[in-house]
Length: 499
Image (spheres, rainbow, N blue to C red):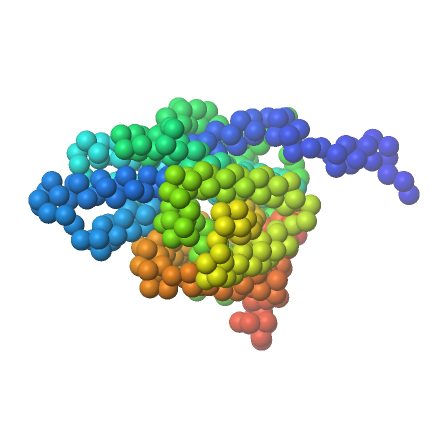
């Protein structure tokens, strides 16, 4: 029996919709831009903003120490303070992750994002006055607060996105993150803010976007999933969907939320400790933590924050380092944008697995070239460019898709705390690691990337085009195989409740 003509036409037109058409039916495109500039852009900017002003900040530490104690600080002391400045940002992220569930659960997603932006504005003021006050401690405090204010954005993006374009919408998190890195590198050039007098401006410049973000963001709706599943407000959820994605009744989307609500209504939102004890989601939690840790410990954090030190050790002239770093960051933006076009076509799993594999090869090549002492500028740049297969872009949608509504906040607390702890340890330890291990320190990153690629290939299922409950069912088989061989874990109900 043939489908009615009107129904078949609707199906064909729906398949042909472009991402831009979907985003411009309502206010979703404007929301993505405002959220990206005021949130993810800030995270990317602060990930690279320290690289170019490295010599000026170390000179500031020396001069501040001398004015206080009338003696030049030992090089080990300067190195330790510099490591604290670098690692303070992920430490702030750790505390932000710890408070994530409290803020998002009590204030909601939208107010939580605004609260984080206000904290970052305070951090910018502290950073801007640190040079006048001749206090490097204020830089550490400001970096802590910047990390504290950047935690809720991925959750908000995941919860507002329809499943058919969820990968591309949540991938804007990585797109703006990469853009922030490039702007951080660009403003650090000596022709702009990369000078002895203006380096502090380079560290605080994106605060102007935060002010605009705080003014504009309250006019956007709250997360529809939060309104429906946690607050039970069906009408507010429908209005939020219409505001974001244009006119329509959105019955299918709300039915999917109803199924998820029915599946979790017997269980209250879990605390992080309760989630770690829950065998039904243990494999999702292990996967999310591993992927996030692999991504943070893959070496990209080191390239962003210590590129000046690495390239100096590679024999590249100091006046060229900022331009090389900027070129690498631009390559990352290109890869991130390319990933956003491919992720809903090829899926998350192939991009993550292939990305980590390419990064492993890149780190091995860097190690070999450094040991052969034949580091031509072009060859070295090419080898590092190979590393910039941006796995972080593809991991962002995956992590947000693994948990249902009642588990998501607790999961993000655990993932964020462990991931930021890993970055903090790496940021503090790397300056000492490269002194003792030299070029072989990059072998550690190659091993991490290889392990990540193998883990993704053998364990992680594909999540493209699936609801949260369908993804949870994918993990049931893995959970049962490893932790529930007797079949004591009951399957999730995927049928809508009877009325």
